[in-house]
Length: 147
Image (tube, rainbow, N blue to C red):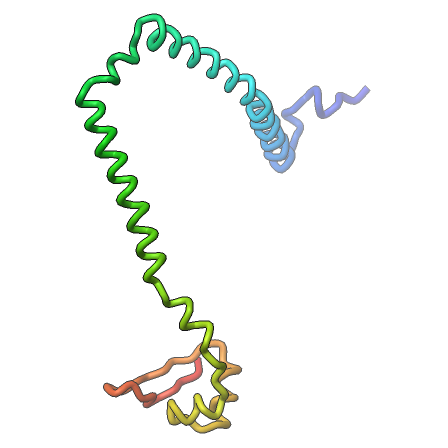
């Protein structure tokens, strides 16, 4: 009987070898994905044991009652409150969004007269995907090139 390809992996061509290795990698990643909750549970257990031993049994919480630690916590809290105040003051005084609500759409004729471009050219330029626009010192359009 002819040997199966599974029994002799050296008979696989390069494409099949790549597919086999990619599939094995996916299976290993899936195994780690499903193993992660178990590892997390073990980590929680050891973290609780460490916390219980160092903070409760050895009274490690007394280390955090020193004046230096309280000063650090006060400074951190003050910085946090300052940032919250700054964000809210900026939100209160930022009125840019309100001005945008009252804008009316501009027609093509108004736009062509403002930029001093012929009306029929504006239609042509709107269909362009890429365009090069040159301006003078006053902000007027001097040259338009289609790309």
